[in-house]
Image (cartoon, rainbow, N blue to C red; front, top):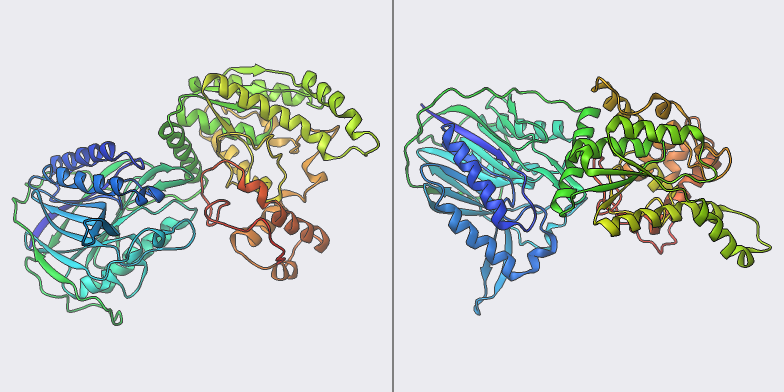
Length: 578
């Protein structure tokens, strides 16, 4: 029996920062070696960052990433490292012909193999077939007498697939490199996937995942270690960079596993490659990672905080501006921003109008005081009156409608963007998913900004997040009056959201069924509870006709199974009705 220490290095890469990402990888290799790890696995496309999107269409980018791998290899002394890269082949003229989502296996400074991802996802937020050519082979690497199979993300979502073929051919340890975005409830699905593979073949399986925010995606880490009985040995920290290691005992030079469950035929015939040997590290005590995780509103909050922090920092901004209305949405956005980048880097802007209630003004100031952020007060009444005067002749003879109401929101959007332009700040918008779905937001008004923190958060979840944030602080930041009062846009006297929308406990389930579950209107109308058909049909129509607004909204953190944006690409000019 040989005891080896296997580490998972979940790192926070930045797309396109090849030099910076290589520094992170090198530092993690050093940390893994310092704790006695013999093998360390990194996330998918760790050198380029994930997802690199159309940067992959640049030959210079692809070649630079491959050159970086050669330099990294020299850092892998007395350790085996599995690193996600972009690989390529060339035509007869020396030009790049195909590129591959790949894993480089480096053992004691030698690149002994490069595996090409076989299964390329092309659904949801993934469009890998746009760029990559699928691999058609796989390998088993003999690392100091231990048979190791390396594959990438989607490869183990197929059964039977690459991981099965590697195990049947003798692999005792499967290392899967991943960049799997966070979604509510997805970690348990991943755990089931990895433990099922391990149990089918009585092997060890380790699933290394990326951590950090990249545009609208946020990666939670949560790397998984599974044992041969299908047990979850450990789950690495969530939403944190970490090098996590466990010790496993394996037979030297083991032949193919005799006792695996029937997994069906695979077309793969793994080749076995023998890597150079190196000295197995002396085993010292390491903290035992706990095999547990949470998946509740606290994790949604952590995802929003990390996604917001990384978007701000990775795009080069230092400070943000937030329009504080005294409402629940702007309050939770301010809390998330304060936790992400510090209150000292936030400026709140209050823009009272003739319809702003005294309570809202007090609540906005109270929130700002509790979070210790400045609140600039810029009344919009002079601009509002000027707009009315400018448009009076044009609008004469026409009844007042939402156009006049939305003038106020557009004035506020103009003020926020002018402040951002003046000081070089980023505007965080405060619209939630319920509003984005129904178009209950003003284009070029409250939708104006650089990042939409709660764009994928339904209104009811906004309230849950607010209660959670208050519960973890000895001095709750969100005033109770903000949570308790009925939601309102305050664009006309005594306005409430329920004047235009059903109550959110009826609206949000309706939207979830239509948007996230992609159910037809017929199915939804048959199963309605508490909402009349005419109202439901009106809401579904609002979802359909407001795609043009959503297409012009800023990116925001994805946390649900289907977010607006790259997750849901509906035509704007369409006459199809569900």
